[in-house]
Amino acid sequence: MDASLESLCAASETAPLLHNGQHSRGPAPGARVLQPQAAPRQRVQRSQPVRILAVRRLQEEDPHLRTSSLPAIPNPFPELCGPGSPPALTPGSLPPGPAAAKQDVRVFSEDGTSKVVEVLADMTARDLCQLLAYRSHCVDDNSWALVEHHPHLGLERCLEDHELVVQVESTMASESKFLFRKNYAKYEFFKNPMNFFPERMVAWCQQSNGSHTQLLQNFLNSSSCPEIQGFLHVKELGRKSWKKLYVCLRRSGLYCSTKGASKEPRHLQLLADLEDSSIFFLIAGRKQYGAPTDYGFCIKPNRVRSEAKELRLLCAEDEQSRTCWVTACRLLKYGMLLYQNYRIPQQRKAMLSSFSTPVRSVSENSLVAMDFSGQTGRVIENPAEAQSAALEEGHAWRKRSTRMNILGSQSPLHPSALSTVIHRTQHWFHGRISREESHRIIKQQGLVDGLFLLRDSQSNPKAFVLTLCHHQKIKNFQILPCEDDGQTFFSLDDGNTKFSDLIQLVDFYQLNKGVLPCRLKHHCIRVAL
Image (cartoon, rainbow, N blue to C red; front, side):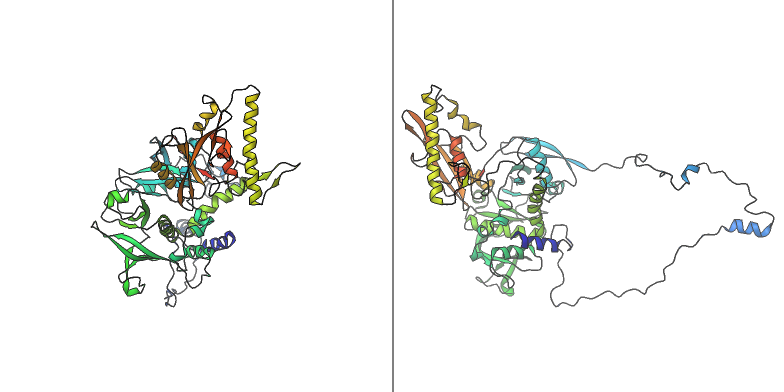
């Protein structure tokens, strides 16, 4: 898929871009293009030497008075006339020009702390995220995002990496602010397009062969005509009522049908234009706007600051449908710029891989089940053998902790030992938060497979809860303490696999999915600025 998209990216680099990142639209097929008449070619006038008439007239009046007889005026700067002389003005001889415009921007974190950053006029959202990650001593894994948050409107969106921070702030109201947080799903649709575009919502165009790779190419190619269709709840402008309408998204805008599910031109009515608008998520749509579902999004014109009357509010039936609509709007609005934003960090990482120390990754490609029983390790490809090795590894941890206790060392499983509280120092542990709060954090940082966090259980004070995302759905798994020979272990599967502390449990399920629907891949993190 990357090879086909790379070829499309190279072809699109020659097309001019508008100010919003879209390619300029050419004339419609079959339309006659009027060529401007060329002006008659004029003869090129080359410069001619200018004669000094005063000297010539002086020579005609007095033939004895010639230019050669006039006293020569000495050259006060002979060093400037030589062929090897240096330039008259050195780079440091001129006064410094006007400095680039700077502006102070305040950025907030998830815990309410903030930091004022001096931002240049040409600084992009990606540049600012890199700066904040560096100052916060965080790992810059290209998943940090700058969020435009409007609390008075109940809207928020992640800025695209190429957007200018100062330009976006100029369209924000005084109550609005920037947030710095993780967003693992920012470019996930390039990796797993089948999870973002359900078959029922995609209208295949003529040049498509029905594959998701071809669908992405159609979105990125400005000359193609992809289409997303389905039913949405639409809020009427200036009213509190919502209507369920058949809506289709095209490159020219978002349309609704005035007659059932008909897509005839005479039955389509324009709802919103994407060119001068931005796509936001509704934070509390039910409470603030009376939305019929929790899966609302909004198309907000850039000129609107604090007025809610001109917002085009929409609601989908489920999370997958809303993600499909929002992703399609981003692709149609920005096109190839999104793919370039996705590829640039990867290309930069590939260039620097030979000069930097590799960072431990928990991706699906780097963590596999291994067998080290022989002289050399091997990858376990059989799922049944991998599950058996996982159980054996869990029992091996248990035997090691038992042997340490027999040798006289303090048991790491004692309630007062460090192992009972060491997990509180980990970024993936969020302490005493509610189920609703944990789900909100997962949604904010991206509904991708393997995104997780751990928290204290509300129903059992001695237990913990693992909150995990899989197939854009959030699931909770209770981690219960169990005793064996006077020692306390933690287990997810009713004691079949036991761990002495939560750090061992997380490390194990990052390598093996076990009873979970997928392995732990990304952890939710909150940083203090």
